[in-house]
Amino acid sequence: MTDTRPLRPIRIALALALAAGTGAAAAQTAPTAPPPGASAAPADREVSRGDRRFLEEASAGGMAEVALGSMARERGGSAPVRQFGERMVADHGRANEELTRLATARGVGTPTDSDRRHRRTMERLGTLQGAEFDRGFAEAMVDDHERTVKLFEAQSRRGEDAEIKAFATRTLPTLREHLQGARALRDSVQAAR
Image (tube, rainbow, N blue to C red; front, top):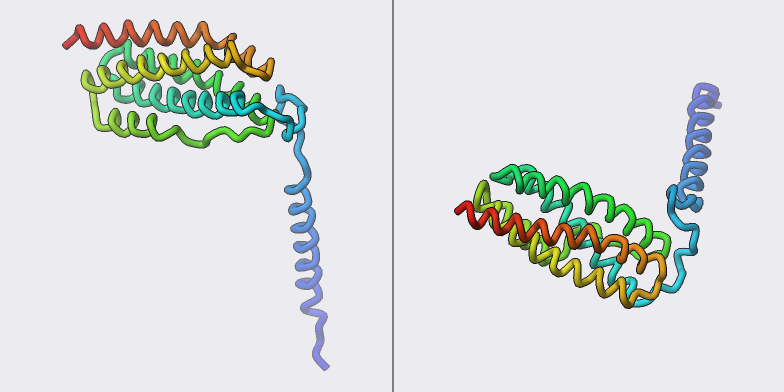
């Protein structure tokens, strides 16, 4: 007969570890409360195709603006370009947080990466430095903000979800300021040639 007493503490520890693991697994699958400030609306709430498209496109564009703004802070050859980049990071970062909250409350997934058009722009700008970067960045900001203003104007007019529509309407003045600033930046970096 073999003595199993020396194994007894190991068996007890193993049983406790298994029990703890089961509790942790149960805790991971338990539903979580919505983040602070998020609507408690059910995630399966019907979202129109147009509202869903707006949330997805605005999120992808906003992420790209933050990434491009970060590039401008690091690669910009002039103080105005670096300052404009800083503003893009701050303003679009805040807007992205609200977009994510709106999308999450409606069960709409937001992109985790920029769209193809923005990735190409970032790749191209990633090869530039100084004044060349400044010109490319300013052109990209004008192009992006012209598109973004149109997207938000359409949502402001035709959006079906009142909260998403209000977000678009509330954000438009800032986007128009960005567009005006981007045009002025483009003119100044082109004049500096």
